[in-house]
Image 1: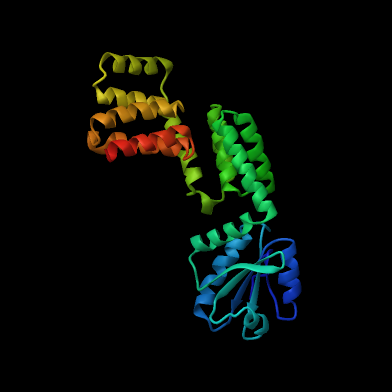
Image 2: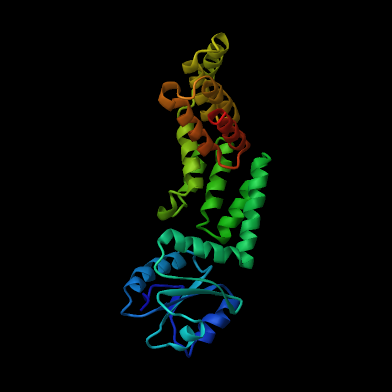
Length: 295
């Protein structure tokens, strides 16, 4: 039986299946969970899938049906074992699985379902436009698009992290931190969020202009001093100049892949995380690192 506090989850019967599932799926995707009271895996899956659906704030609905009391549609769909889950969209089954999957796979299942809807596709297209604008240096346009996505989908972690990164690009660390506060607690380990957090941590180590000039002069005076070059790379990373940081770290790695027990490589990977997976500094840097490691 579903919790009365659940807004997007309900129990149904064979009599109401057409209205609650087939007709309702014309408006938004509907996930059907076929279960029975005696089924142990059903008791495991139920709370996980309900939590995932409720977390989508109405993008998708969950309908639960006890097959002991309502066997008709389970039989029509060929359900042979439970738990069995089917996704309906536009009046027809479009996907499904059997067994008690872990939460990560449940979320991936719902992500795939939602991205196939008109609303999901619109958000996916908008995210792509925002990313393109950001990579082109047009952070103003990117920020506007990310903000519009968040208005439609307040828990869209990709958009929240993207907006925070736009603030970072403009040197506004405080607004970036405030934006990240919008991320739900259970999604704070998302790679996009972690990337912005890493960038924020790096910014805290930013030195003064004089310190920067001193570090640059030291490297120019003694190019073989890896410690001085590493210090300069850290300052570039703290200033958000990721491509420059990558260049200097790769110079060190080109001379000695295991310098200081892998210190330069570890910092390089942190820079990749801070810059973001699609940033040109990361794309080029990973290719160059692979060339060094597998030459």
